[in-house]
Image (cartoon, rainbow, N blue to C red; front, side, top):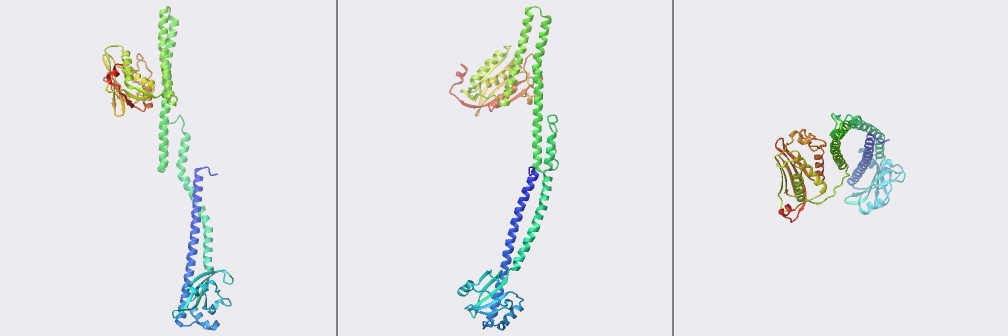
Length: 483
């Protein structure tokens, strides 16, 4: 029944309001009752003090309880329009005078009266026995000439107080539920108004699917929280749209890259079957087919590597790796890749000791082999490819720079994307499927490193990789180079 957010908000609002109304009702009932009883006690005290003053001025206590002898008391009470019960007792507890409204009843004089006589202090008590049930009684010492000669008793019914409290209870019992109902309905309406943007967002979200990821949520004049929710969802949609676009592009590029060698294989095989006559012609065809098969194998291996890295299924076997030794190996590999000896490959180790990093040696080798292969591949002779290693604080910095064809500035933000190839690099004579730099970026990120590139067309390119070091050994630079 209360599964919707609107219902739960209204329920909690109503329960909270009910608790507040009940607490405030109890408070006001208690406060009003205390004030009314206090006012009644003050009135009894005022009357008792005036009666005591009246007798103190007359300088005598009534001689007996004969009704006629209390005429002066009745006249005094009538002049002040007091209707309370008044009774005068001497120190022995004998009644000396009483007001006419007592008729045949007499105000009790028990332990409270004894306390007044002994301690000469006023005492208030509430009577419960008939005929004075519900009467509030004040016993006040009567002093004449500085001497306590009796007790003034003044009593009054608390029915007016109870009547006022009863009326308050009736009002609270009648109007509190009505007020609670009205405010709950108002809360239901306001909750609906407040949640209306959420419902609109929900309906809009249901309309969005893989075919219309370009749509965005509109909020209008909703509150800040709703606007932040919509903005966050729009940002997520943008990321999803970008991811879906990359997946589509990836699928298309992968299909294209795999279809191209297959097309070549098919075409050359058909030509060989139709025209090849000699073993040499068949051999040339098979060598060409093997080249395309190797190309497909490299593409598939790279795709599998990236897919495993995305899914977290490719754990790194990290251990101390000597970058100094690795750069020596990369230098030798780069030297062997060049086809023209006028292309210089240079190694520059600007360190005094062996530089160690905590990493996966196989993946680090793949990282730098990809970079040196690209540098040699896209640098025409005569030219220069330089590999350098130096320390920058607690990080090792490896730079591979060349004097090759360079990369236009508008391509630089995208070169680490999968299957992305700069136009100058799309010549099939140099091969490649645009996956090498994507693998480079993944390996760098997996080792908590950073890579950036600076390039200028016709001048050259520099890739700069920095990795956190594990610590140097005592091996000198010359010893490293002589290995």
